Image (cartoon, rainbow, N blue to C red; front, top):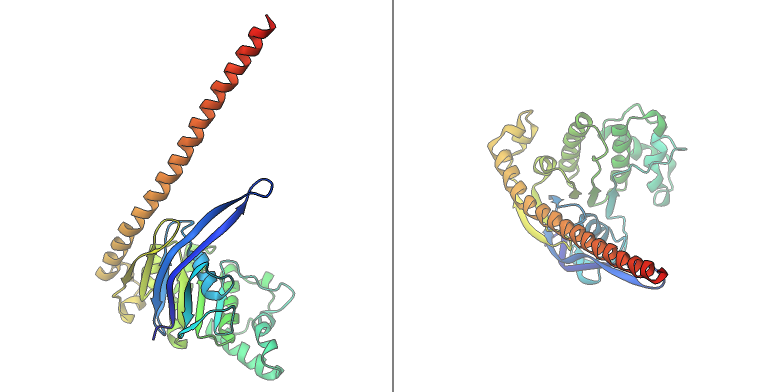
Length: 296
């Protein structure tokens, strides 16, 4: 049985206009996707295709208009402890220490303070932050803050980790180190991971599979198996591996087609706006001419 299964998932947002009028913005047009237990699934797609919307639906933060998403065969009805979310921004509490931030989620489920502390310290060690438990967020680098966010999510012992571009705001060097840490942690903890990114290289390096989404409204265009071995991923020269290069080229071709569609749609909108502007200028000029003639 699939750990996560999405069947014909559709989602449309209403955008408020002037007065009581609304525009409809279709985000997802029928997403079908299966993620196996312990699998690391990465989703890539052009900006605005609905990647984060789909992750929110899996997290139970919002509900689909049509279709279903199930965890272990049971439809999602809302947020649950079996799913933890790590966002792009770390969202740490500035008044809490690193240890206090990791303990936060445990406070509602474990009344034993000593046990909470032990669990939090274990996960801080897992993400490489032993010895930083008394530091406050402003004393940490961006990469260290994101490690704390990951430790806080793992401390709840979820079966699923949902990660929405968690490394996007980091510098290239820190990002590469954290990619390796995330891969190591996911394998050691045997979590099912749904990871959103705009980086094809990141997708190939991390993913057991990569799902390519179409331009908005998004659907799953294709799921690509990444044939890298654990030894190849551990290598410093992984980007030179034949499997890495071939997977990257395939994903780029699939993604490029969707990016072109987005650019063409934007060009058509700009052209229409320009045409409407010219018509308005002509109409304004004609009105001004009539007014000038009326004054004679």
